[in-house]
Length: 88
Image (cartoon, rainbow, N blue to C red; front, side, top):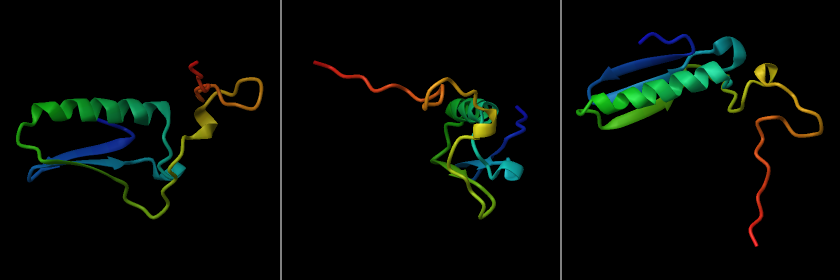
């Protein structure tokens, strides 16, 4: 499978998933999330794999979602933020 937001390589018992959105500092968006899920799901077919490595190629890593692509809801929370649950 071909990916636009990640690179997926398998060699020497290692699956390497490289984030590939340098123009957005590799911030996660829905497309990148879907590609990562697909790549991780495909790892199961490689019985010889010992390691799955998640990496990114630059020093400009942004470990957060890409807020430009996330819809806002009314109020102070973003639509994707789960609400706390309380059990009694």
